Length: 149
Image (cartoon, rainbow, N blue to C red; front, side):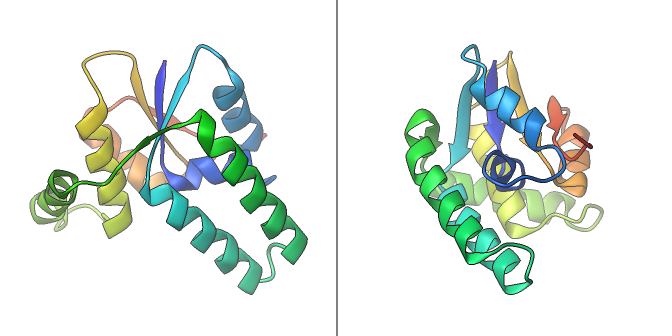
């Protein structure tokens, strides 16, 4: 399967929290190809430091997660953010923003997914409930990773 991970789901591969075992299983399955946006590289570090500031993670856990991410990223297919992806993200906001709580970075993840997916065997993996709901609204196959382990 081709799996596109947004940052909320990808983080679970490096941090023990709800849904982490499901994410690890998906990533470790050799039959799966893991795709991410290059946005995830920045957003992942930002999320870790936010959790550190909120006293949810220790400095050691942040450091270990960052090192793990730097090592693991070589196993992922990383899609660069191009102007057409940003334009598609903007179109999502203009077209659906009045009815759906679409955040900027979520729109970029979805636009990246649209840019790379073909007709079959593609799944959008997220731990963000509103984003997953919106992706389903767009008729994407969504794998939720916010369930209990």
